[in-house]
Amino acid sequence: MSKTKDRIRESNLRYKQSLGQNFLYDEELLSALAEAAGVSADEDVLEIGPGCGSLTKHLCRRAAHVLAVELDERLIPLLTAFMAEEKNLAIVQGDVMALNLQEVTKDLKKPFAVVANIPYYITTPLIQHLLTGGLPVSRLALMVQKEVADKILSSPGDDGWGPLAIRCQYMCEPHLAMDVPAACFTPPPKVDSAFIVLPLREKPAVEVKSEEMFFKVAAAAFASRRKTMVNNLCATFRVERPQAAEWMRAAGLNEMVRGEKLSLEELARLADAIYIS
Ligand code: SAM
Figure 1 (cartoon, rainbow, N blue to C red):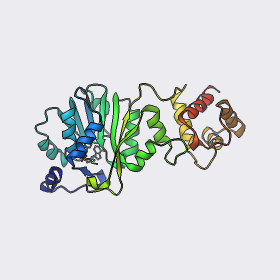
Figure 2 (cartoon, protein in one colour):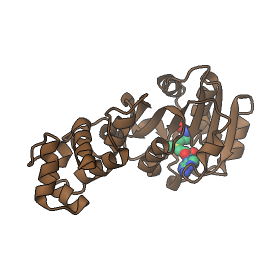
Figure 3 (tube, helix red, strand yellow):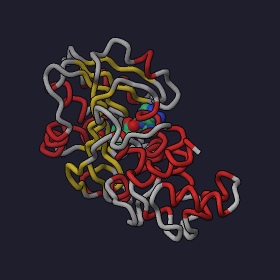
């Protein structure tokens, strides 16, 4: 039996499904994840959901400092005992979605990496939170459901192409590090997973006159997937068809195209056309 499984068994801990508690225990896999996260000896790491510390241990070996945020109070003594020898670790108990992360991470060297085998129930809000919260982050290295990884890595016109992919690809250069089968976790989740790395871009993938307008247009593109972009613009911006069609023409786009087919560049051109009109 692995050390993680031993520790959980000895502590009589009951997994909380509601907290997305699916733990990793294979030391080779954990080492490969820490390697894929690209953490270097002069870099600090924010780990979300350390659980029993199995990934944390590998991160502590590679990083300058690790700050681990864990919601489940029951895990803190277990984690503290297991990590007693790691002098470069700080543990904070709390909900990553509720904590003031600017404050919590104030002592980390900037920019820092975020590494996590995240609880899947907060995947999308957590990624949004990390990308829009103004944190000085160098990259996100995250275990997510395979389906979410496919979405983040999708291209215009793919089923998964939508607001999450647009947000991630606008700000980062996401790539798949490895697929991770459900059997690698204890207890195994119902879905397969993937470890993805999202290095933040120095500047966004496309230049826009207004980010707010860009993300409003991106949301409009998927307001109703069956409708053309013109119809979605009419609904989102409360304008008549001729106005929406004029914006499309000004952006060099076909009036009949569906929003789900539009690339970052096309959405940016459309957002700029609307912004300056
Ligand atoms: N890192 C460990 C591993 O790889 O084995 C545990 C990963 S487990 C998928 C997710 C962890 O996130 C659990 O320890 C869970 O208690 C914790 N967690 C769940 N919701 C959280 C939240 N809102 N804030 C911080 N931690 C959370």
